[in-house]
Each structure stands twice: as C-alpha cells, then as structure tokens.
Length: 209
View 1 (spheres, rainbow, N blue to C red):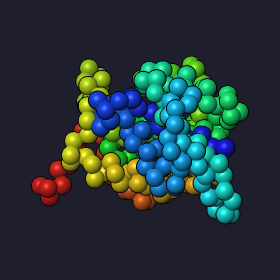
View 2: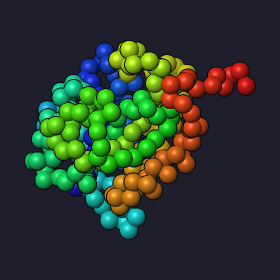
View 3: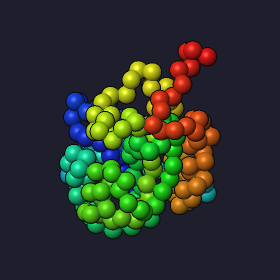
C-alpha cells in the first residue's frame, strides 16, 4: 500500500492558505483517481482507492489529511503508518515549500525540516526518511513575514499556476508506484512548467509583457 499525505490545517478558515496546498493536492488526487469518500481515522481524514501501475497492476493507496493542525501532523501520519505497516519508502508527503519559487516542484527523501513545522512533527513522531513532494509557494523575502505568508490565502492571480501544479501532480501520480521520484518530478514539471526563479522575489507580472 502507498500512503499519500497532504499537509494543511483543518477548517474553512485555513482552506485557501498557502500552507494548505497539500490538502488541496490530495483532494484533487481523490477526485482524479476515483478514491472512496473521506472518513475520520488516524486523527485525520482518509480516502481509500487504488492507482494503476505501468504494467496495469492495481496498487492500493491511502490518502491522508491530518486534522491535528500542522504542528502535530506527525501523530496522524505515524498512526497510519504503524496500523497498516507502511514503510517510509511507501509514504509520500505533499506540502508547501517556501524555498522554491511559485509553481516549482521537487522530490526529496529524508533530511531536516527546513523550518516547516509539519515536517518537523513528522520527523519526530513518524519517521525522518519519508519521501517528500515539495510544492513551491515562494518566500515573502524576510524571515519575519514567513508565518503570515504561509497562513494567508493564495491571491486570485496565483490560482492558474496553483491549479496547474496540483493537476500535474494528480496526473502523474501513478509514477510514484515505481519509487522513481526523479521521473515523477520531471513529469510534473513537464505538465506544469514553471520558470526557475528566486523564491524570494514575486513572479513577473505577465499582464505587463
């Protein structure tokens, strides 16, 4: 079984936040790949389904949205992993990454939390060696503004690249079954190309071109 986690904060107040792009992604995965209804479990919400591998085989998958608030996400993830005996290699976490420019995407396994409280909790309460799907949301420019940045909603002008990135992650999702994260990353960026840029600078205003 593949465990696919999206990080965010529960409740309508946070639904449109940059910090909730992980929730947005797994919601799209559930719709795109016909997962079952969301239900309460593992201190979160889960949806069960299957993905089709390149050879046509169906592989069970579980989507998880921790409802513990971001800072305690690891409790929910660890509980799900232990119950289903899911290894770190079969667990992928989607979350917002301020050190990537808006729309950029990078896969990574293990490492530190880089200031992300959800990942810090997962390292402490679940496992440090999970596969990470880092979804770029840009940086406000100075450390003091990071908290307000991630807990503010995406602007209307952001939604085209946000939707493109989420759709690309959903379309390419079966590639995660082969544990070939480089291939998945490449395919996501092919489907939703985003310019390499300094994450601390806002994207150029295309309307002025």
